[in-house]
Structures are given as structure tokens and as C-alpha cells.
Amino acid sequence: LTQEKQIKLDLETLEFSISEHVEEFRQRLFQYFGLAILAISGLFIQITPIVLFLEAPVQEIKFIQLSPGEYFFSTVKIAVYGGFLISIPFLISQLIFYVLPGLTKFEKKIILPILFASVTLFWLGLLFAYNILIPAALKFFIGYSKLVIEPLWSFDQYFDFVLFLFYSTGLSF
Image (cartoon, rainbow, N blue to C red; front, side):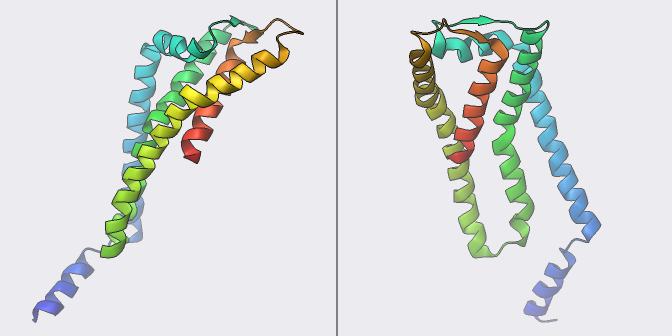
């Protein structure tokens, strides 16, 4: 056989059946969820410093618990959202590496820098949200109602607001 035909035959043997593609995709999802569970567990174990870190932008606000178990369920929510937030770059990379074999050489040259840039921009979005967006939004909301009502915020609603800003800003970057 000529060298060209041999290369063609080698490429044909590398092709996967549908069930092999599904199995590879399933394995990549299991890897992602395994990492996400590890991240969630690690965050839940260290939840107190994380809560204090997230409360830092609003030192002058007193938080209240409006229902039994609100703090516990809120910390579970923070750990889950935080774990997924930390593992999103890994999910993106797993999806890229799943489609990578089907791309042309030119597309492969482009996709890896795009992956790096996407992950970097995602983390820059989180930094922007924590350092600029959240303090500005909270300053506005506190100042808007300061003369009329005393700000007592629900612990759960505050963290829903902060986590929403983290996710939306990180993904939009």
C-alpha cells in the first residue's frame, strides 16, 4: 500500500461508533461531576470563611434569619453554586476536548487559545463582580433606602443576589 492509503486506513480505524462517542461523553461528564462534588465538599467544609468573605462588601448591614434552618440551607446553596462556579472552566475544557478530534488542524490551532482566553475572562468577570459590581450595587441599594428604612437583610436573599451577580458577570465576560 502506498503511504497515503495507509494514512487513510489509519484515520478510518480511529473513527468511533455512536455508542463509543456516547461513552466518551458520559466519561467526561462523570469526570466533571466528580470534580464538582469534590469542590462542593471542600467549600462546605470551609464554609464559614467563605460566608465571611461574601459578607465583606456590606459590613454595615445586619443579616437576619427569617426561617428555621435558613443559614444551613443557604450555606449548602453557597457550597453547591460555588462548587459549580469553580468547576465551570473544567466543564468547558472537557467539552472542547470532546469535540477536538473532529476539528481540522486550523480549528485546533484556534480552539486552545480561545479556551484559555475564555477561562481567563471568566475569572476576570468574577473578580470584577466581587471588587466593582457588587460593592457598587450594594452601595446604591443601601443609599436608596437609607433615609426611609433600616436595612435588615435576609441572609438567604443577600447570597442569592451575590451569587446571581457572580454567575451572570463571569459568564458574560
